[in-house]
Amino acid sequence: AQSVTQLDSHVSVSEGTPVLLRCNYSSSYSPSLFWYVQHPNKGLQLLLKYTSAATLVKGINGFEAEFKKSETSFHLTKPSAHMSDAAEYFCVVRLMDSSYKLIFGSGTRLLVRP
Amino acid sequence: NAGVMQNPRHLVRRRGQEARLRCSPMKGHSHVYWYRQLPEEGLKFMVYLQKENIIDESGMPKERFSAEFPKEGPSILRIQQVVRGDSAAYFCASSPEVSSYEQYFGPGTRLTVT
Image (cartoon, rainbow over all chains, first blue to last red):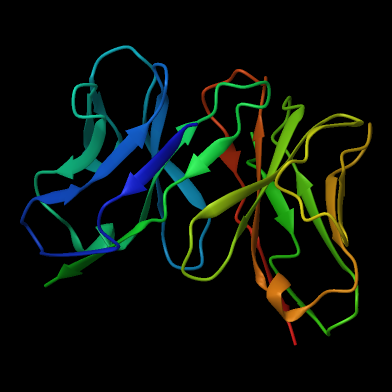
């Protein structure tokens, strides 16, 4: 079965410092992985996706993620946090069955201190 | 190109009433997914529909919940005889084809049952 585990429910950083949001996946074959961001009372926005091309994936707003098969990880990073990055972040795997539905992690709430 | 549209954005129902949530996919998209987000949790898959067909409803509660995507008009998620536990945010996503790597999310409908 495919699943994702987000290792931290909350992450707090100071503005201008690096961001690391951790995600591990479980899959019996090469997965399609995504990071989505959800600002308070808003919908979901796709940050980036991994679809078996380059292992280092660049997304919007300066975020990137690296797919590491040996570690079954897909951690999200950003060199310098901005106040506007405060939000909920979801690591997501896409099922490779006939529906291709998305399986969401439990989410990591990112707090950015001034 | 307008994004995925959902209405209403907020819906308040008393216990025992019916809730009808509507989703208009992006133009040219014929695949619709419904997800539910309970408070402080990630999104959970409910149902996947194509025009006039339910393809995968493995995430739908067995009773009171139904979904449709008619040939004309929006997709409808219907909840009969709502209970407090149905209070959640319901998100719709659409994609142009089932194997598309991206699902585009609407802003969600926040259902409150009093």
